[in-house]
Length: 213
Image (cartoon, rainbow, N blue to C red; front, side, top):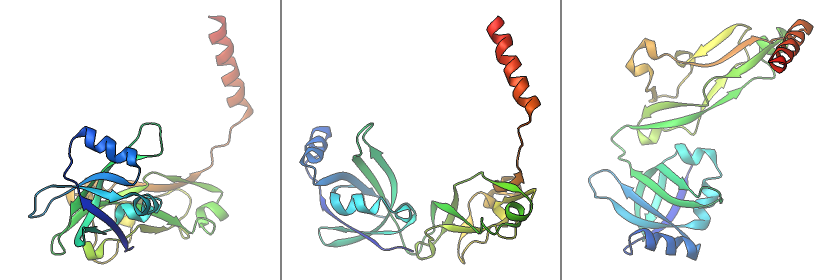
């Protein structure tokens, strides 16, 4: 699990106007931290470290050390609001986590072994990624940055499902906990579809027919 530390201060000047003033100052990002036995608290997060952290994919699946005026809170990101056309964060939501309670998070899938994959290298197939992330449940200490999917031995015509993934100790699939019918596909190696001259001629005829109308 990666280590991320963000510094924040309590925000007493609330409301949309206050948030706009904070963003215009361009030093901090308005946010809220909630959950656990404490009430929701409005904060402002130091911008430079925050923006650097979100460049790392693992930030979104990590427990973050949030230092609010020197007091530590263990949190995860629950929501980020972004400006519609500028590369700016407009607000963030953080959820407090308890070391003794499991949390549910979406973590990315990292596919490895593609160059050595039997179905691709030796059998002429191609990879189709059907899911980029999966929902997992675990204690905060067991939260992984990502789930690795090694496809080196995967053969042509194979589809891997959630049940085929090797999850770290203490980590369970949220979907599989609901039953086998939720054993969703995550990737497949299939035969490359070859476009023939007949396919191309057929498309051309279709375009001519539509033009005739």
